Image 1 (cartoon, rainbow, N blue to C red):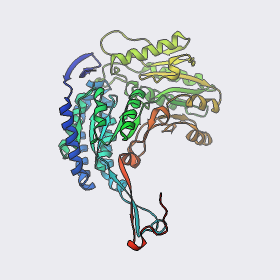
Image 2 (image 1 turned 180 degrees about the vertical axis):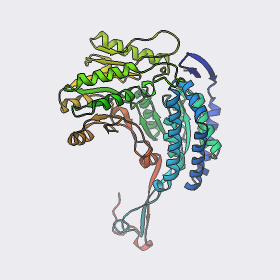
Image 3 (image 1 turned 180 degrees about the horizontal axis):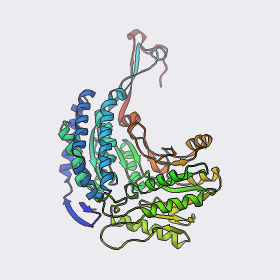
Image 4 (image 1 turned 60 degrees about the horizontal axis):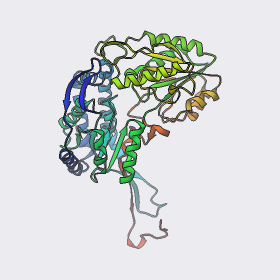
Length: 470
């Protein structure tokens, strides 16, 4: 795949880049390794000063950066502006909280026969981030902000269709004051990842992407004995029970399905509705979806812009047509529009069966599948009946049902009466084929730290007294 900016609204190639040579990549890894030796010795306060400066740059340049993201991958301009602001918020969160998150944790010294015992969290070195195009700034920042604040350095291999956003990220951290090499964008194709991750100077990797990409990264990292964090997408359930506020549920369902033009790992994709309220919810939901305006993502009145690629649009249309050909019913949408740009209308499909691709596959666009269930138990069975386990939603006003959903939904995130999203304050990640490890919060920051036991004895005479070997 060429490294190029192609406007999804027009299909026009605007700018292309030559991939970096092996020598250039090697030099970048060397700079990251050298920068780590300096960065991890700086104080948290110094790193916080640089991180706050990065936040200030993001805020000051929000509109131009948002326009760039919209041009590269087609999200609405308003959504792109919100993404930049969210990144600045994350930078400030880690700047303000990293010292607490990284502080030594005292242990019971007496229990371990020590004068003093603590758990210390220290950075491990250069970390490779392989990132997708759908949230080209936020996906990177939720790794970069905690990693840099911990004292690690970052090497970014971004998706090949958002090269300008990738280069902007490197530029922001450099201008904010981070040492040269602390964060570097590598303009390379996916074929270069094996060699980069195999380099002994690269200590770990994080990936947000497809299952196949996750398996590839995991295989390389396993061979090289390197830590990985993988977020591999999802087919998130959105369960609606009889006690739910149907108007609010249908409103949020529309946003949850079509946010980012439907191209979000944590977008609700499978709408599992109790039979007692199925018809009423389906009517409200389909009407909301059909009312969304599809068009120029720079137009402030647009709700849904183009998909990021022509191949992506063709794929979701093939999934919809497969469902219809096997007996599914279209409540709205489902027709690929003519003309320039890779647009697709908000679509609602019902009467789905296991023989249809939509039953088991993630649909990465503004297409919703409706499933009718007759009980709580059946709702859980359908919700968990997928290989994915990233996010999940449940709508019920019954406190007992809320607790049951929180326990029974097999996912990394459970949101009750609200839309799944990510916050710097909360850990984010999945189970099953949605990956492993966590981003965000203190847990995410520590994924790329050496959690070190420090044991200090009273003196030589007591060393090892009463202890047993491993």
